[in-house]
Image 1 (cartoon, rainbow, N blue to C red):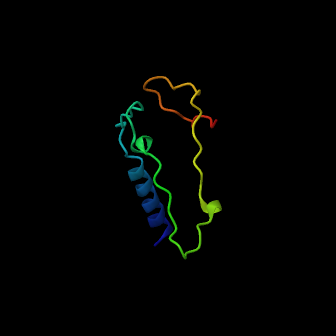
Image 2 (spheres, rainbow, N blue to C red; image 1 turned 60 degrees about the horizontal axis):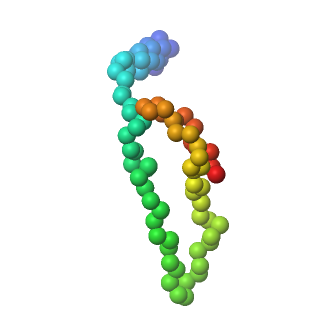
Image 3 (cartoon, rainbow, N blue to C red; image 1 turned 180 degrees about the horizontal axis):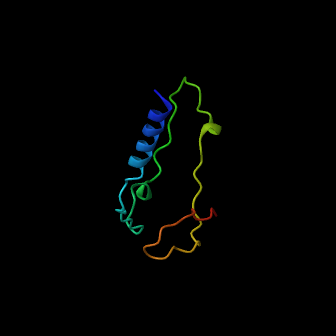
Amino acid sequence: MTNGQLIAVIFLGASLAACGGNDSIPLDCDDQLQYQNRTAGKRVVVPEGLDPLNEFAEMPIPKADPDAPNPDPGKCVDMPPPVG
């Protein structure tokens, strides 16, 4: 492939990548998202005769601060709430 063909392919690829359109996806942050309705599952019970699970291999998920102010209606949260 010559340099001219390489430049033409790169230019064509960049031109096509820029043709995404101007349609924006409406985002309503007041809708309940799938992860917001999740609850904690049951802990694993190790049967007798097997090694216990390593408790340090778990990733604890902290609870959000209940006193944190709620975002404005319809506004998306940029940062997670503080952990209390």
